[in-house]
Length: 290
Image (cartoon, rainbow, N blue to C red):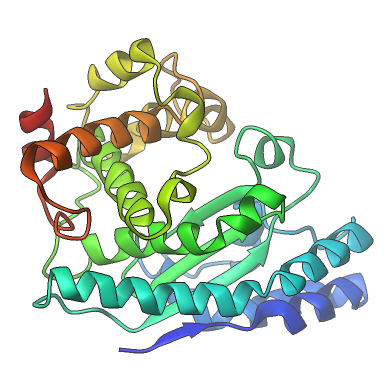
């Protein structure tokens, strides 16, 4: 098992300084080593278009602002910290579940778009994905709160990656439930908190962590099926609306907050650690708690 944190600092600096007509090609070359994370997309993927859709740094404006942010990432030693955190987290996970197979991991860290109001505001300057075996994607703006959570954010995505790797939980987009997604976010935060304390809470989860009305509303949708229906239940209406999904009357991060509550109650009831609960069925968590 190897962990490769792609050194995207020099590539991003080159892109932001290059003539604008050259930037698409340079961006595609930077992302190509992690293009396998799009292997389930139909047809030939457009890496530049996907970068833009994910609120990645702009290729036609805000160069100086992005260059300053890039230096903030370097000053924070972001790439090294992420690599070390993942190595330590894998060791912790293997100690708890020695029979799992940890895949080779490729990590892509990119800057976000400072002019994207949803990304910089409700999403708090962070989008990330660890759902595709072998790949972690971290797109962030270096707010101080995001920089101090670099390790926890990477470990959160690692937990997703290991939960859904071969031999783990099967994620079928057509039949998977909101409950599985909500529980998975709670487990990922719990694993990050096992290693980093309260910094392991996703920033999206904390505003509504103790809101009983939000919790009850999310619980009412746990049996909703089909990945296309998930956005509002987990991320909230504001983010769901960006992508044309149906809203359900929930604030940003509602599913993360509910997931933390469900998983914490489950771990307290069973005496397990988050690492030990890596592959626990979401149904078991829900039935134990509710």
